[in-house]
Image (cartoon, rainbow, N blue to C red; front, top):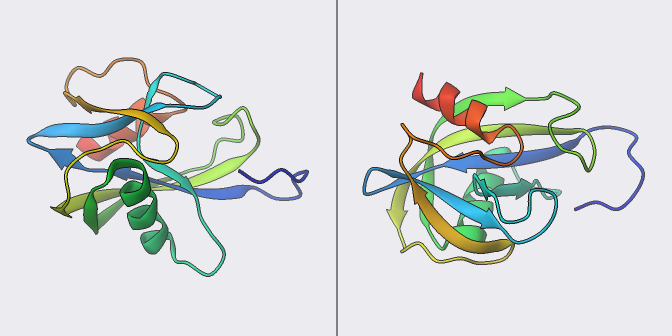
Length: 133
């Protein structure tokens, strides 16, 4: 996470991927929303496309290899992240390999029923609803 004062929004990516018909989520290891389920994702790095970034973030957090299927949406509400203004690009992904295992910022992997979501971190329940629409 950037630690400098904001002069513009930070760009993040989030991925939606199914394993055995269940939505892959991570239990957050760190604040904000520590312990809550969230879509795997994170900050875009300099020099990478959003598509490369979401594939990298999902691999780092879940151990899954994926490919981008489609853009779900762009989420830019300045209050969506209490750490500062972030703009996220959310992508539907197809699993191409790997088995779910918690990595980097994930405390654990959870497989969620997309029809019966628990409360989720950030605006991720809204992103899931848009993905299902």
